Amino acid sequence: MKNLMILSGGFDPIHMGHVYMIQAASLVGDIVICLNSDDWLIRKKGKPFMSWIERATIVGNMKYVIDVLPMNDDDDSACDGIESAYTKYKKKYDMIYFGNGGDKNPVSTPGKEQELCKQLGIGLVWELGGTTKVQSSNWSLDQQGQ
Image (cartoon, rainbow, N blue to C red; front, side):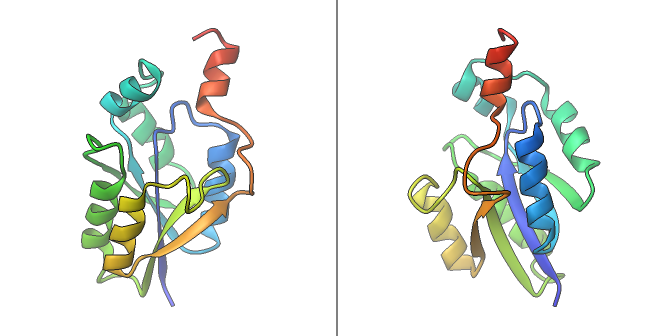
């Protein structure tokens, strides 16, 4: 059985929590990253630390990641990315999952993402890489005075 795991995030900057999440996701299947836009990072934390192309290049060259997709995240959800990945890969995989890191759960993940996954038959996987957030991009930047 061939599985695909869709992950989304800003990965700005990438840190060990992302690595743990990707390693855990690789146990389920191949990985597609839906990468948040620079505009989303501006809304979230004031400015991006790295540009989209820098982040895409780094995560796209990580072991187990087969593709990095841009997404329209104007609604602050990963719905566009999930749908794009599903459309692109649905015929190549037996099962597709949408995964979330340790700090994400059914309460903290946008309901519209969960509803879209349910409509498309995409499985939801929680706590990839552990049950708690081991590191945060914001924590890293705060320590450096960014």
